[in-house]
Image (cartoon, rainbow, N blue to C red):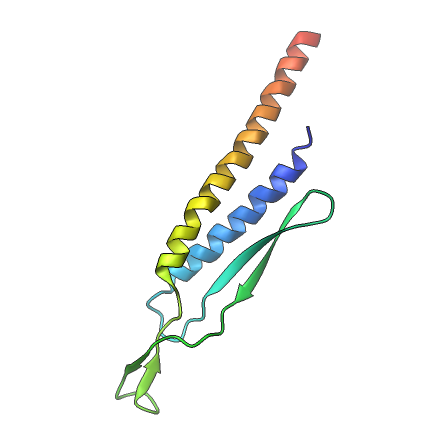
Length: 114
């Protein structure tokens, strides 16, 4: 069993969680543009992640001190980001469990041989 594939998946899911955490941390930062992490199959059976910037406009609010009287808020979709964390967490846990099982099996095999 090759744990390299599971390690690349763990890395990709970690990146996805980091992007989501960054979005949520900046939800109240005016003008902030959110990002999303797209997980794809890489060469072989590896997993890779592509971070894509969302350049859509956020909601506009009145602001007298702004140049044109309005200011753009962040375009972070909190509901989307929070719900995306659920399958990401499950996928991360599943890959971690696969690595743990592989290591346990190898340990058992070594004990049987020794």
